[in-house]
Image (tube, rainbow, N blue to C red; front, side, top):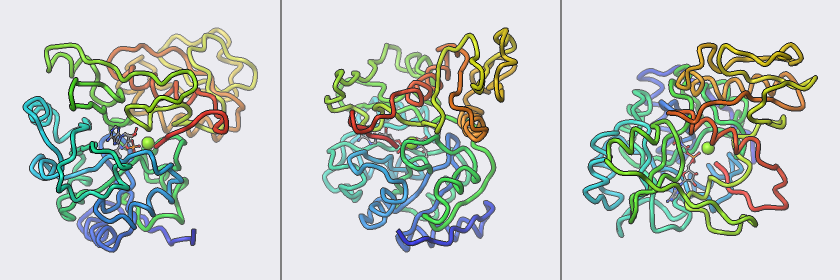
Length: 338
Ligand code: TXA
Ligand code: MG
């Protein structure tokens, strides 16, 4: 693809206007959200969406999340039952993505939803994301603004290093506060957790008053159609191998620590970063992708990751780490990533 001159603009009224102009012209704009930086394109413009898949090198069978400014805009795209209205009322704007049945006259193109009759919708709470969506006033697809399969971006610098020369504009508003992507909940028949994320399972279960099913795992060959196509196999992966639940460090490994009690041989580590010295999962989520990128840059062959509790945001952190640690042999197994 021909190289573009990617501009980086500090968030503010001029950057919002510029983002709107780029989206209107069918271009690509990376912008901050409360979870991670997203790469936006006009969801109703198939040529713009095709450009986005190409810039990310994302398989076109992996559908995108459609972002809108508010519930009223979302209701023009999908069918909301009482449960979906309640969830949206409680958690929007915020890091919850709802997968719903598309309305027959939904203007979002088939490319954005990968031909499915469902659509993933999200109303972000980040003021800059909200300002861009309000100004553009049309649905915007926004996957994480990284090369497909690699570590998600939580700063403008991360976006620039992955997608510089491939997109038109990056709106910079500093680090993403939450650090892991939105929770994806399907509300079609049963309520199903398709991707653990920034709103923890227990918060949703408490709100609904009943347990929620987890998405069925694909069979061993990876052949089963995954309910959230992006949740298969290798994903969020640094260049280095990732080894989870490490209680010791091999010579030459980098250490991604968690909490105050380090392994006795932590001194073996080529480099060490702590996700949270105090052992807080919320802090760990905010640091996860930036620390993975920094440890990867130190050139270690592997990153040993200390155990992280499954509580609260720990479920989303461990989910991302499992994908980062998954086998990378894309020839041997189908891969759908975001
Ligand atoms: O926090 C987030 O959600 C970020 C920010 C930028 O908003 N976005 C994000 O998008 O994580 P992406 O494209 O990296 O992940 C989208 C996920 C994929 O796993 C995809 O398969 C799933 O959403 N998805 C999209 N549409 C779907 C649908 N109709 N049914 C099931 N899963 C869907
Ligand atoms: Mg992604």
